[in-house]
Image 1: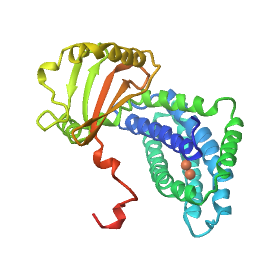
Image 2 (image 1 turned 30 degrees about the horizontal axis):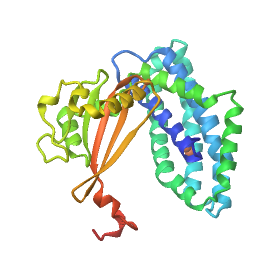
Image 3 (image 1 turned 135 degrees about the horizontal axis):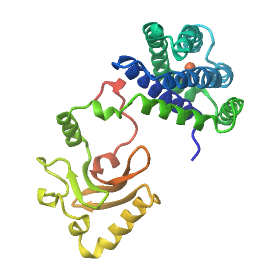
Image 4 (image 1 turned 60 degrees about the horizontal axis):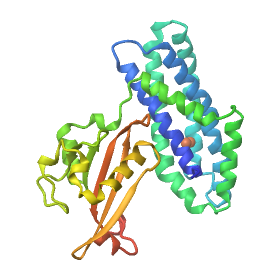
Length: 316
Ligand SMILES: [Fe+2]
Ligand SMILES: [Fe+2]
């Protein structure tokens, strides 16, 4: 399915945050940042973020939001535009320093790091405000027909930078992130916390590795919907299912491994409870099949929900 305008703009923010994280890592490492990484990051920031992403907003999104009744002055639009201006001022400080650095003048490293922190700190805040405040507000005021016109504006803006601009710069951002050893967020979690988080999930999970060997199940010391025992760890998943259903298990796993399927789901009734069972292929960021995740969830109470109860309502 094609992405909506807000999803595309948030994808841009996410790719950019990886570039920022790569530079954060590179400037705090003991070795000076690689020149190629700095020059690619500057190309990404000045071409894609400033001249492409910001213009998608300034030329197409913001004017429509204004047309739908949010004033340009004195509100979030004025703040966003002022921050774009401020980011351009900070980029103008950053750019010549980066050029000197790339040309071999290592004495600017400290000034470059400071200029980068000033620039990225502003934009990290800015992205958060857009993701959490401006875009949700826009989604409330925009009309259904506005979707196509913003998407057309995004396409027009990107086309001015060549074919497949977005994919080109996302690949560049991923390359910069790899050069800056940007790890998945979970790497920052300690094992004890990670294990406790898995046991706190409102779904029971189990994991079968890429060789179909049972490797993990959660909630070991709690009552579970389906009993599990430690002796299953290390067994082939086919040994853990009744013979009559093994061919279905194998068909699902083959489809996951071949990249032909992204979920298999079942639901059953257990006494008066409705149990939702889902299987998902687990893949590495580069698409390698790592195994199969099973989730088991009691959805009885969820099925009964109606209306809404919001954090703001103060009535729970
Ligand atoms: Fe923006
Ligand atoms: Fe943005």
